[in-house]
Structure formats: structure tokens, C-alpha cells
Image 1: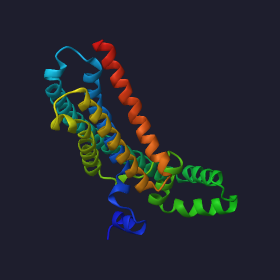
Image 2: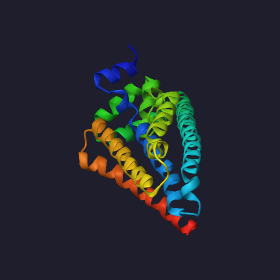
Image 3: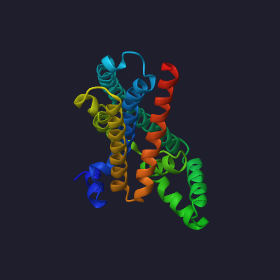
Image 4: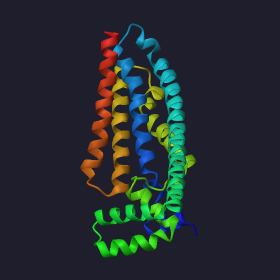
Length: 241
């Protein structure tokens, strides 16, 4: 059994908890971004919207949905890959410093341990022991000196796929009424309701994964999405008006 499997089983981590950041980030952005298309058309209320509005919303909405989902997924992939590369480069540099100047690095570690609350005698003993184990010492220095966590447990590919998938699934919800009905003001109201349902569902996912207060997790998610949607509608109204 590898370390990641052990970590998931020992701490009862499901995939939703492990990839919660990507699910919430991709889902919220997908909902808001797609609804911005719907709200922008509705806010503009230009001549001929009744005839072409539904088709325009679907064409622009779907094009934007898949383009942004791809961008978000690849962005998450590249971001984590860069984080991996930066961590390895900094850790290798730290290992070289330990090998070339162990006394200086031991003093640094001693000071860090003292700042973390260890008594001087214990900090000195621990620093002396860890100096003889450079890989462990480098890991501690990466965490306490540079504030960097080892990202090897995170897969850039999986993070990117979860971000992409969440963006598509949640982002498609505001478009559903336009697939089912003709573009009218009532359809727009149904899209608003669908968007709220999607935001609530995303908030419930947060609540289920974190165990925090229900009203807080759902309320925050809905509030952020609502603010973004109102901005999109206002911009459409100003430009179209």
C-alpha cells in the first residue's frame, strides 16, 4: 500500500474531500461564468432577443463553458506542475546547503525549533540528530523555513480533470432551461432558479466534505455566486441600455 492510499484510509478521506478545492473552485467558476452569458443577454434586452436569444445563449454559453473549462483544467495542471518543480528545486538547494555547510544549517534548525516552542536542550539535541539525516532535515526546513508543503501527494492530471469536470457539470446548469423551452423572460427566471439550485448543491458538497456549519458553507457559496451574477446582469443592462 502506498502512502497516499494509507493516508486516505487512515483519515477516511474520500475523493470529494481530497479534491474539494478543485470541485468548489471549478464548480463555482463554471456556474458564475455560464450564468454571466445568460444574465448578459437578459440584461441587454436588445431588439430581436426573443428571436435569436435562445440560440445565442446556447451557442455562446456552450462555447464559453467548454473553452473556460479547458482553460481552468489546464491552468490547474500547469499550476500544480510548477509547484512540484519549485518544491523540488528548493529542496535540492536545501540538501546542497546541508551538505556544504551543516553547522550553519544546524544552527538555523535549532533557532526554528526554539521558535516553535522547544526548550533549548531538546532543540539542540533534535537539531544535532536531524543534521545526520539530511532528507528529513530538508523536509522540516522546507516546511518551517520556507512555508512550503510537499506537493508530491497531489496529481496535476487528477487535479486538472476534477477542475474541468466540476466546471462542466455545474456550469451547464444555468443553460438547461434554454435547452428545454423557448427564450422568454420566464426562461430567464428558470435559469436564475437553476443557478441558485446549482450554488446550493455546491455549498452542500462543501458542507458534506468539511462538516462545518451548514448555513455558513451554503450561504457563502450562494452569496459569492449571486454577487458575480448581479455584476454580469448589471453590465449587460448598462451596455444594452
